[in-house]
Length: 248
Image (tube, rainbow, N blue to C red; front, side):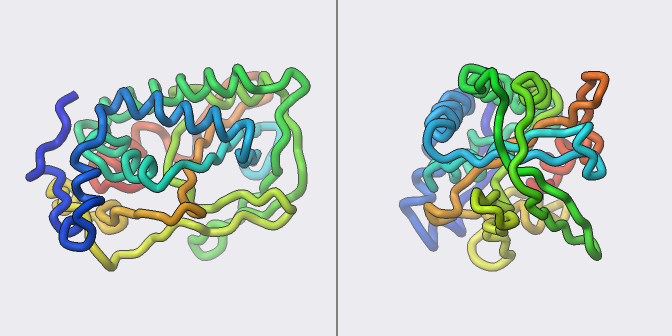
């Protein structure tokens, strides 16, 4: 794909605040290189520090999905989320291009999980998802193991997605903690396409410290008959939202 121009995706506000960061954002490698780099980060995390969770449709674990959270460097986080060759830039081009890129990326990440996943099953944390006045809360229910087959089925590249991590899973029994630095203050990306659609959080070029630089993979829900579904936010709707506003 042709990446957006400086006029279409600018770093002028970032440059005033942090010139070195702006230069880095303007010079990252092509989008296909990002796929390989994220795969390497996930592969390292699977043997060091990965967080794995499971929830179910309406909290029914007969229809579970898997979540993998893995740490990245702040620079890789910035490349993924804010650069002109990053993940959101693919959706900026078009919802179709964005979904195609997401599928290629998730297919690569699934292959890495497939090489790693033990035949005895994948252990993680079971989560109950609660909604109160429009706010989501994830409650840790304890350890849970799903079969290798269920985990890989959940990671259907057409129904899985990746994003910055907002609620980091714990490995000590505590419920996930909010880590995303969502704010509408400070320097913003200059993306006229998003501005025209009234974007708010999409224009915020989040740059975490090392402790908060995590990405989050969410799979589809595996029904008892083996079919995989994504009822929460359908891929076409999510793609349109990111295309229009840089956020979903």
